[in-house]
Length: 307
Figure 1 (cartoon, rainbow, N blue to C red):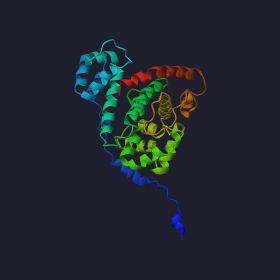
Figure 2 (figure 1 turned 135 degrees about the vertical axis):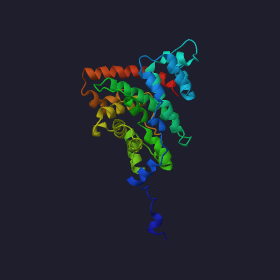
Figure 3 (figure 1 turned 180 degrees about the horizontal axis):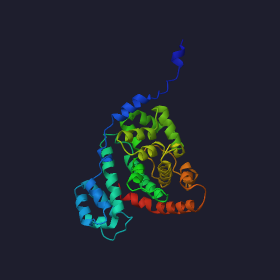
Figure 4 (figure 1 turned 45 degrees about the horizontal axis):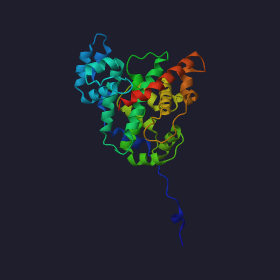
C-alpha cells in the first residue's frame, strides 16, 4: 500500500532569500566599460573643434568598434552606392551622435559576451533589443522638458535588461526553467522570475549596476522600467524606458529570452509610462506619436547595421 508521501507531487522550487540573491549577483564579473568608456573618444566627440581624422584615429585602435562602424555605414539604412572601407569617411556619414552611441554599446556588449554564458541562448536578440531601446529612450526623453548633458538617456535603455545577463550567469538552471514557463506578457515574465528566483530581472539588474556605482537615474530606471508609476524618483527615465521597450517589441525585436507576443500598434499609449510623459491626449502626445511613427520606419534598418 502506498503511503501519503508517495502520492505527493514534487515540491515547487523555493525562491532564494535576499542575502543569497545579492551574494550571487555580487559574484558576477565586473564590467569595466560601465565606468570607463574610452575617454579620448568621448572628449573628441563632445568637442565642436574635433576633426573627423582625429576621431577616426582613435576608432582605428579598437578593431571591434571599427568593424561595427563600417558595418553600420554600409547597411541598407544609409543606401550608399559604393561600399565604404574608410573609417574617416564612415565618421562623416554617421555623425558624432551615432559614433558616440556605438562607442558606448560596443564595449558593454563585448564584455557581457565574455561572461562565459550559455551559447544556445538568443543573445543577438537581447543585444538588438537593448540597443533599439537605447536609441528610442534617448529620442523619447528628448521630447520632454528634461535636459540631459551626458549619456544617461542612452545607457538606461542599453542596460535595462542587464538583469537577464546576470541571471544567465548567477541562476543558469533557474533561467531555463523560467524560459519554459508560459507567459502572455512581460509582466507575467517578471512574475515567473520572482516565483522561481525571488527577484525579477529588473531588481537583479538594478542591484548589479548599483554595485558598479552607476548613477541613481540608471539604477532607478532599470528597477522600475516595468512599473514606472512606482518609481520613487526619476520617473521620466523609467517611463521613457517602459515606452521604448514596448515600441521596440512592436518591431519584432523581442527582449531575447522570453517568448511573449509582440506589442500591438499603439499599445504603448495605454502604458503608465506614456501618461507620466505626456498626460492626456494633447499636443505633446500627438507630437510624440508622430515621432515614434517616424522612428518605427527607420529603426529596423538601423539595427541591421549594428549587430
